[in-house]
Image 1 (spheres, helix red, strand yellow):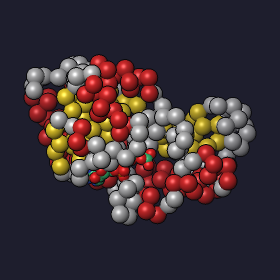
Image 2 (cartoon, helix red, strand yellow):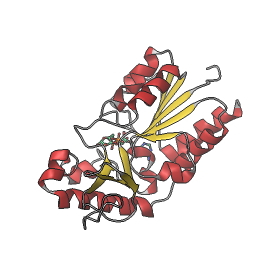
Image 3 (tube, helix red, strand yellow):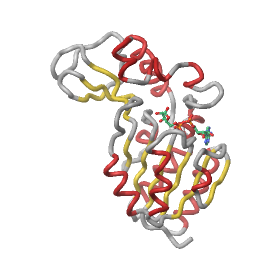
Image 4 (cartoon, helix red, strand yellow):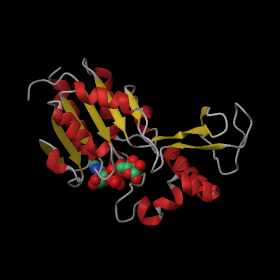
Length: 234
Ligand code: APR
């Protein structure tokens, strides 16, 4: 394929699996051990805030102990060296991409290291627990919630993502099952605008048929090799 100019990359939980963070839909994943309706909806938070806050406090602590892996490092290298546009769209709420050095990055499902005040709407970088209902640094109300996009809520940055998809000539999906929209539909948008599409994943995703090419394997093997090939053409 001729050298792409503008690239959009979508990542999911699979890119952080080799950093020791749980994925969602594996046999022993997060949704095997928790009900979405108990921990990942606004109704769940209204019904039992302590249960929801504890679920995210545990994931925030795990994410802080985790380290970026070779796949995160490779994408950061691409972000820094690529002369064209690159947008790294992650569904993940861990901060491993930024800790690896990625900058042209957006978290469409929110971030564990951010707390959102339901009283004054302020957002704060947050690395501690929320379970003890700490005061919002801005308005002092005990109204902080995880800054996570729950089921039924609107993902973040969709306008920017749609614009990037309409202008990219390469779309690459890494470590996602293609189970959740709108992320699962990005490949079809990219194709509609004429982009080539590539999937790098451990298993075929639910959207594999929409990709021009798919490579199966672990992210720490596939992603560095793909980035090295791309940068060799720069
Ligand atoms: N390397 C590459 N891919 C991997 C690896 C690995 N080491 N390990 C797992 N995978 C793949 C799996 O084959 C699977 O297709 O990563 C994917 C993980 O899928 P999910 O667990 O469904 O996670 P994800 O696709 O990110 O979920 C999307 O669903 O629940 C919501 O908001 C949540 O952002 C999440 C969204």
